[in-house]
Image 1 (cartoon, rainbow, N blue to C red):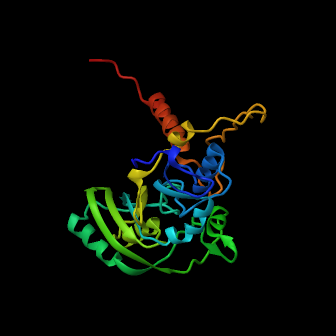
Image 2: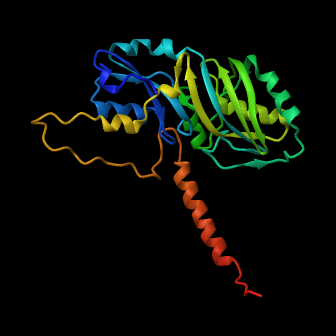
Image 3: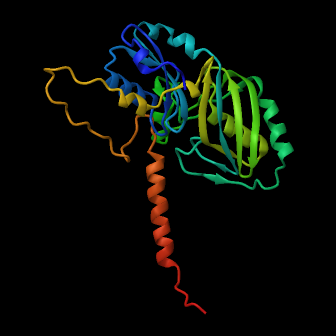
Length: 280
């Protein structure tokens, strides 16, 4: 954690604030939360993180918002997990598995060798469940309604793609890449090369340029330093919490809550259907 405390920041004049984004929060959710908690007038983020990703989210306030484009252009470093043998339409856990294929025959050497063709400058097709615009509309808007969309490939640079753990069907990875790289697409493409399919199950943004997640504040730390309401502002309005099952702007269906409910229901069903056996 950075030695600089929140009391040292001058948000109105302009600061670069590092946040560790929680799971299922959109980047806009975090901006709105911090803006309200610290009563910052001008604030924006330097690089979106998907709701199902965690890790470094950089917020710029005041005059520092002019540096957002510069920060976004810097290289990114990610760590996470791919699951081999299964594919999903969104290339991650946002949507259900739509295809399963054998994977047990793959060797560690085959998996590591497959990553070599994804380093350097490569052509990558962004996911249909992404904010890429297609004919003036966000791709995820078309995907949610079942519409087809042709997304053109884009050139990205992957400087490092290494496998850090192999425990099939899971493999952990570390990626250092350029702006605009979709790690979900990397999961899809690796699965195609291996012939078994794959999707992303965990993603943490570790670094943007020289900014690192270990120097980031948690949202709980920010909330604890919420300034008192000025006298004369009247009583604070009760905070409205969004239901866990409410639809998300980006199409996320709050997978954690829904999957937990589904898993609990399945356990109850299995327990009810399990025949009773008398001890011998």
